[in-house]
Image (spheres, rainbow, N blue to C red):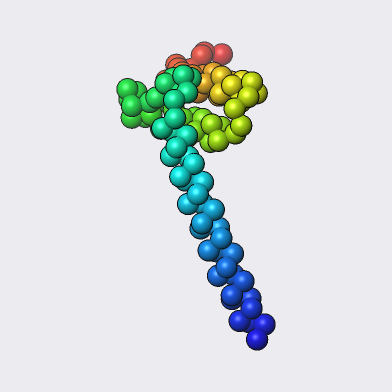
Length: 99
């Protein structure tokens, strides 16, 4: 009987996790569609494909940050993330500095 309970518990936990992920995906979708002025600067479709890969990481994280409550600290997080994205994209095509 304990095997049944364990299997049942595993199934239940997987179902709950799947539901929670579906809900989180919907919230992410809504966050992506919501207007936030700073989000325009996380666009990457205009970049070369190799630069898009770097920039997309930051754009995806920015969407996650949008899920946090709106407050001054969230704004700071987005601004600093934008600074980091800009630096990472520049780093991806910067020439090596001779030493």
